[in-house]
Amino acid sequence: MNVIYIDSLFALNFILNYLLLLLSARLTGAPLARWRLLTGAALGAGYAVLTVLPALSWTGSVLVKIAVTLPIAAVSRGIGRGFLRFLTLFWLSSFLLAGIVLGLGLMISGSPYIHIPVEVLLLTASIVYFVLSVALKGITRFGGLKSKLVPVEISFRGRQVTFNALADTGHTLTDPMTGQSVLVADKDSVLPLLPRDVRALLNTVTNPVELVEQVPLVDNAMLFRLIPYQAIGIQTGWLAAFRPDSVTVGGIKHNKALVAFSTLSSDKAYRALVSA
Image 1 (tube, one colour):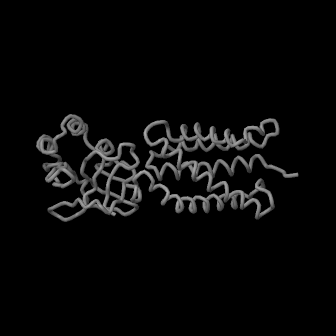
Image 2 (cartoon, rainbow, N blue to C red; image 1 turned 135 degrees about the vertical axis):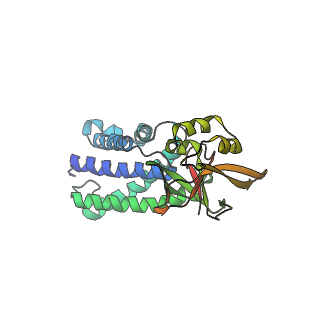
Image 3 (cartoon, rainbow, N blue to C red; image 1 turned 60 degrees about the horizontal axis):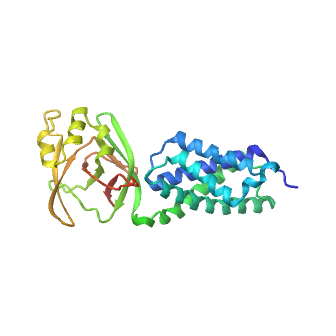
């Protein structure tokens, strides 16, 4: 007869569910609300405990398992644009994880339910997270995402914003004066960095030329400048850009970088474009 340790089962599922939800959020560019991910992980771990109780064994059916993932994903991500992408990745990563955990239990004791020491459990969770993150980077290319997502942090006058950017080899926008690459960010994602009066202008003035003319001077210098660009159907266009204190892309900090504003991914899978 197999002995199931409820505490070990809950802890194992909680840690692995959290890592899977965190992985899905990062790969889809979803905002990382830690309390949401922790709540979703606890919900999933609690369900795992229910499935091994004799009176509730019916909850372990395939249909119930699939149904339970819906509230777990909804709590962790929130229902909105990008939810289906997040849910799909959570399903795929869970399928891969199930095979890894089952194989581990069978190799150690011939049973998938065993008492795993905390240090072994944490090491196993880390290995699973690494394996899945590598495996799923290629899977996330469905839906047109053909380049990798990288974390970005922009700092300006004591404020910071963080989000995912799409590292795209086709992104070649540069500053014509310095030749430096220009990061193009979704306007709403950068607004919290700017002074209140500037935010008001950005919400009302859509023409980049007019915006540069109307934004007040900051430290006796122009905050924005114009960057020319070309695109399909646009022979010559302009983007308003500013120079923050620093831009960190994929862990690499740049003290001299420009950030331009534009409208990007509609489902917020990424909020900026950077040169790959």
